Length: 87
Image 1 (spheres, rainbow, N blue to C red):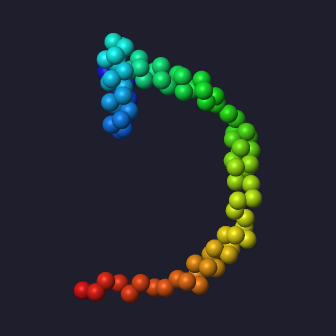
Image 2: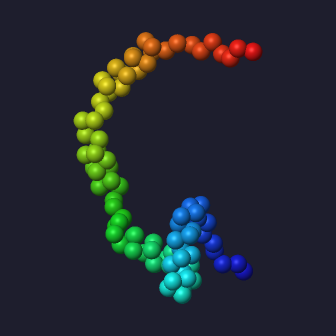
Image 3: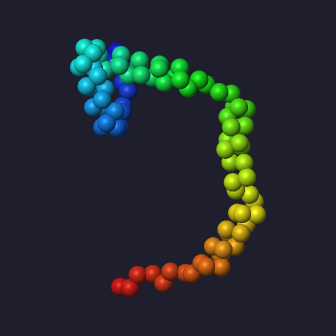
């Protein structure tokens, strides 16, 4: 039976994990587990209600329905069909 694997697509993250692994003389999976554990401690899970409240406070007053209507009207007024490429 094979062990689970984690694929990291960031060359920077991979290189950092390898350097830390060599420096600490510990396997890469232990380095990654410790880093993720520390991250989880600093960013505790929040409830969906708190998340929505936070998102509403961030976006409060930034964009309204009237703003979107004005934007759509402006786009429609300035829309010009593309003639296509010349062959």
